[in-house]
Image 1 (cartoon, rainbow, N blue to C red):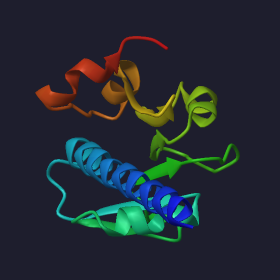
Image 2: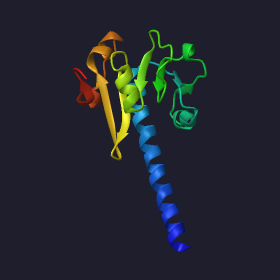
Image 3: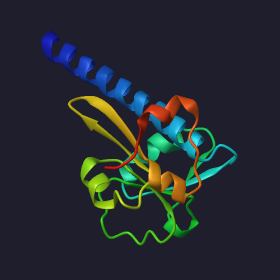
Image 4: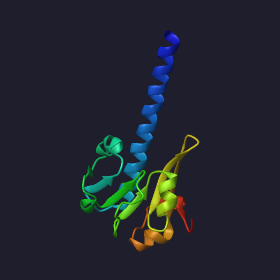
Amino acid sequence: MKKLLLILISALILAASGTDKEIHIYSTILNAIFPNKKVIYVWLDNPAKRKIFQKIKGVRVVKNHNKADILILYKSFDVPTDDKIIFADGYLVFEHFKNRLVGGFYWQKGRPNLVFIKKNLKDHNISLPANLKDYIEDDM
């Protein structure tokens, strides 16, 4: 019983630290993409992730993608994206939208991967701060 409790507590600690990292990473990303906005409106296709974004200062999660400044896609491939800024959270979505999204964040082998696409950043007139320049790729 003690071993089971120890395993459960360890799993919860690891899950919490992963969530904290995700909050920190998304806070950094959103503030870099929208440096002059006091409130950033985010639309997500994964309702389970709302809590993460609600913990980020200056971020409001919206239910209508037309009211969003940025669409963060986890699984959708048929979202009408129009001229919205798109950011992928997941490699498959990243691959599907790579010609239109500004970047992607996904976990691979337990590590976070962050990529921005230079051409698409330029198309949206986004200039990233120095601390994110290393994550910009010319072509994917």
